[in-house]
Image (cartoon, rainbow, N blue to C red):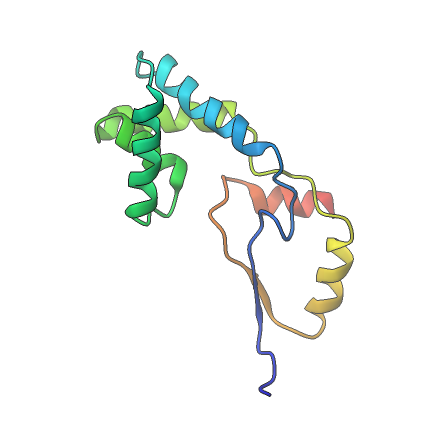
Length: 130
């Protein structure tokens, strides 16, 4: 068996508890379209935007969903994205029980990194939890 050379962590789930966040993010996307783009989004349209984001392997799903919903209007998409980030909570800042101790222990023996598409400022917020 080969020696473990490193660990890549996803934040949502293993490190933080994201339960319940998806409803808030969905509401935020729809509110951003209503307030900034001044139009509502049908369930079918929203589902198509999510599917487009998944199929295009977009690195930032929220940005790609809003880009698609604004008919790829870069200026309008940027405004809706800024609004979205101003109203939604980030990925949960609630660390899972025992994770700080586990990461501290493992970091003494194994190189680690976080690989995730988190909202702005998450590394700083996680360090504040320390």
